[in-house]
Image 1 (tube, rainbow, N blue to C red):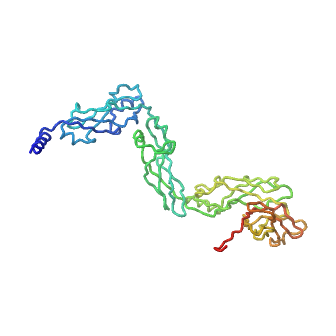
Image 2 (image 1 turned 90 degrees about the horizontal axis):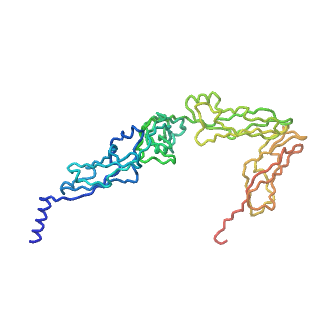
Image 3 (image 1 turned 90 degrees about the vertical axis):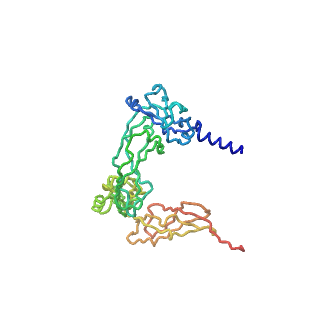
Length: 417
């Protein structure tokens, strides 16, 4: 009975007398409203919260029934810049006021009592909007021609210390499998000079548009576009231009309708002008590297992964000589050790043959006998001379060498041996 009486007494005290209690609440820094920012804006300054201050702790005293119903969202915290102790300190200390419906201000205790802010010079700067398609790829037979943002540049206003950290403003568009032009609204990505995105708290200090319209123009691909090269000047006396070659000899280009029509009018070939390769007084091959981008028709471009460099080569030979390709399968290997094998790096070897007393008109590459001597050679990579025997009256313009690889013969052993 004593226990029952005690419980009843406690129940009466709690529910009838409703005792006074104290509870604590935490208000994050982002939920503290800064009032009258125009007070410092007129001086060309902006406020930035001190990151070292995590938030404030609020202790509320009141009737138990009232206090236990409270949550963080019931509190409104504000700091009035006009009530700052001084604007000449760094950080500036602003008194914090917290209000809560049903709770007297006298029953609310705040810790800490001041909000720390830093005043920074306000700055406005223009940034170009870069458009990227990331790792996405258009459908087969198409390349990305042009990516354009509207607007192409934006103004960003914010604290000078934060504006100076901005490295790029980027809009992304996904073009996976797309085979037609695209126009869509895209969110902007603001990054620092290290390429890392600005945090949400940093973005809160910036005044700028957050979305732009992105246009993606897709161009069709044309393959096997030939390269035609010319030369200027004349080789030395007794020499002639035997051939003009390029590496690569064909290109793949992407272009819009106008660009592909112009390419077609050019015979689907790119011409490299003669002044790019001067062979004046040359007695041997002359080669030059050029940037092919200078000679592409307007509204066309190289396909993804293509090199901009093209090598133009003029083969210069003595008059009365010609160049031939000797298949390496026709080259005999001599004096190779029995436990070794050899492979050629190239399918063919170029040989240059000149007339002495013979006639090249009747020459056939099958009439050539060629061999390499690998006496005393072990495993490894080598550049070796090729001995070439020609029909009577013909001779080589220059010596012939080839690259080979010598390896051991592999033997598959059975379980017994």
